[in-house]
Image 1 (cartoon, helix red, strand yellow):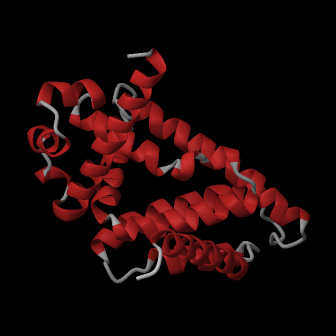
Image 2 (cartoon, one colour; image 1 turned 30 degrees about the vertical axis):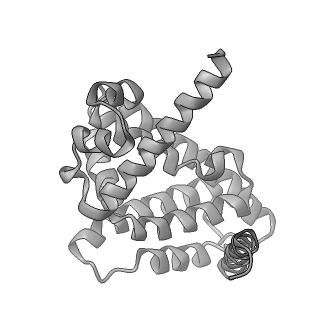
Length: 218
């Protein structure tokens, strides 16, 4: 098999494994997922599965990486509006896949140890989010909407801290609507949240229409 085709096949199988793992997490939670069961679902032996994704912790890490790159894009590649939209969409996705959100919180706490498997991932993630936030809030500042006394770097740190803090609190206080609270903070910081929500809604409507057209008449 040509190298390019072999790589594409391996990448496709890797995506299949990640999709199956995410489905299991959504249904039963991470602790109930086993390598053996996951291997059976995707038609691999446990040994072959480990070859594709490594350990169970490495599988989780790869799921988190993929979550941060919907459509193949990452935060650092986006302009201000796209970055804010991706952040809000990610918060809604967290509500849908609560098991992955719980694992993110757990793994981020464990990864404070420098020798932890995920330490580098979270270090780089916070740095990239901070840099993206600075760019985004610089645009807000240039538009004259950032409140006096708050610079773009401070605004970016505030939003990241609010999100992480509310996500953690919501496990103890399920009545907290993280998305609504984050939207409120963004509004206080001068972000045109209503326009972003309209953009997200329009995009979702367009995708739904494309899917309907591809499905053909009922």
